Length: 90
Image 1 (cartoon, rainbow, N blue to C red):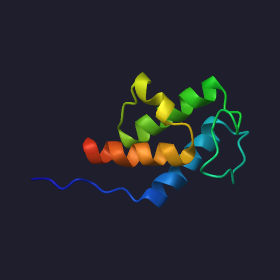
Image 2: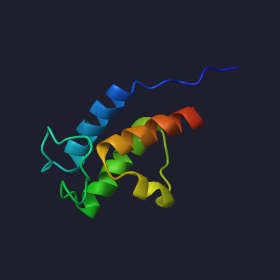
Image 3: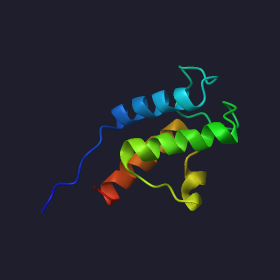
């Protein structure tokens, strides 16, 4: 039996923020984790697609279209990633 990898949530949050800054460079580097990416930070659809694609590549995940509404804030994105890696370790 293989052990399920455990991701450090703080590390996931930090990486998530970095990936967002690459995908949407106009977002403030110190944006709070709880603010909405589109509504509050103004991330456009192209930036959001690039952001999710970068996270999919980094974590070896595929985010189905039905899950995109779950990714409203950096905090929600980190929770989603940690939960998905727990459910589907590769």
